[in-house]
Image (spheres, rainbow, N blue to C red):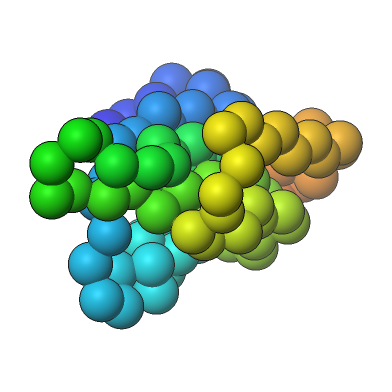
Length: 107
């Protein structure tokens, strides 16, 4: 879906997620997000739930922002804070310059 959005000109993709914790899942999640913003160019904002659902499922947080394939900020995994906010100033010209270097996008 993010590829289609990027081809339509979307520069910032936001993903509000409820991804529960599994052993080594964060590593796979990071790789997926980095690859998505690397392949497409742009900003990928990933926000994950934290805490327990009252049963057996635990959400581990680790929300992050990725720019053109690089993680530029990430909140901690397994935080005990009720609310955490992270900010990043992003130069959107970096996204546009990155996209012009891609053979599939270059004019």
